[in-house]
Length: 418
Image (tube, rainbow, N blue to C red; front, side, top):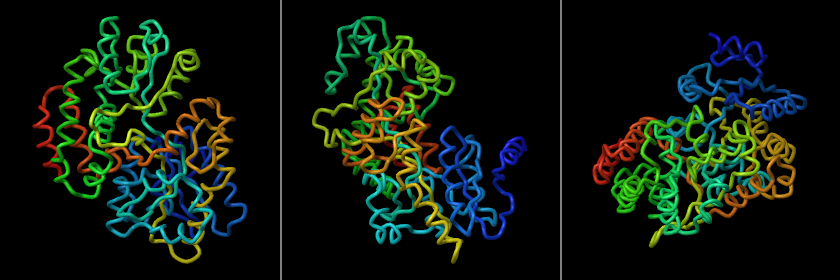
């Protein structure tokens, strides 16, 4: 009730309210980036006969609200999502518009986005989402002061990384901050290790519904590597009780209690908000290294490529055409510039010059180059897989890190996911 009153007060309506005729109900995840989508609606409504109505849904429980609404008369017409598993069930039930023909016939739209980003929004090799927010790759951050005191350099190889574990342990510093109470932070390690070990195609098979791919030798090797890191003390001794949402891991990292932190690119903004001096002077960043004899391309990236607009297939005629025109606004230059002004890194092609105006241009260009040059950008597994698989998967990963499952038991548990 409180959420509904807040939404009504800001003039955005609320999920579940009856939609007026001749309007598009556009759902968006409510956070600091929403102001860009507000501007998009305002601009669109100045020229469109069919008006868009933005519904800002509080982030907590967004996906649950979205799933509950889809298939009902109160389903959104256009809505924010993560692509992949977050919409795969809707695709199976023919609830979404296949945007592939629309994008193929519109050269400007087709070329507007980085290929690795646009491909990440596909389901069954068809495009069901238009990129509408900034990119969020997982980045290996490091504390410059801690490295300088140790006379160390950021790792360029896996052997370098293992050597750094020993170096920082001798100095009484936890090599890697890890928020073990939040399983999704551990997932980032598993994602990169599987990609570097077996290549992006291993998880792609899993995402495509081939559960036997969990039995690929690269999955066992990944689990063994995780166990090795835990046994080496790479994450310290108390990681299982450290959180991320209350800034636990990030604070340890900023205060020099940990040397490195594998985290989504939003870690920069998080540190900027909570440890401003560290963000501006002490925060460094680099790429995740290759593994010896690994099949994966070391330029591959994991994380959240971006968020997407999807369009409901219930729309017909003028409303459907209006919805398609609305989602195309995310490809326009002003939209990318608004994202940059908001501190995001846009997913549109040729945005390098815009990023000189970013609040942190060096960091923004690093991210942009990372994603632009990536042969493959794997969507976070908990978003790529259906909810009925994602939840037990995270539980299994947490048990692997906590030594409650052996590497072999982890593989068996993952193969059992349906």
